[in-house]
Length: 204
Image (cartoon, rainbow, N blue to C red; front, side, top):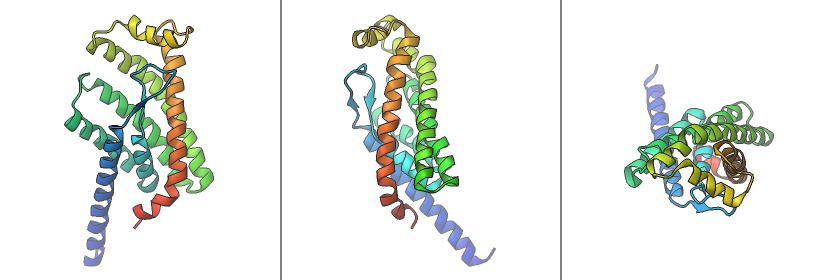
């Protein structure tokens, strides 16, 4: 390998680290501005941090997306702390990875507008499935334990909004699943609109 190739390789590595770091910081900052939505329990809040993660994944690949997602969670733990012994953050990480990894893998092989649209649909479907499982087995039991809330009380929040919610399974089916799909669609629309405008900055 020539000296010029070594320099180019090091420069490329430094640029990759810099871009990932910047997008991780942006994702963390966006994570601070979550908004509750009507028709969903108050602890389900819509955030736009995954927009930065998805843009990074589309521009630099699934590894970059996964690293940005992970660093976002690490930054949140460092500056915000946790009141669920990191269980909530782990759930958030799983959901974020479920969205960014499969979608960015597909987009890396189909870099067209149609490919981007299909990639986003794949990511949303993955988010819906993994998000539901993560909530059923991890997040909801963790919130019940660490906040001292009986599961019946959490389910009751859903029942107050939709009478069909009667247990944990129906809570996930009628509350968690629609919320995750809605979140995925909103994030997907923003990414679809912004990506081509922002990507030139990430490919310099």
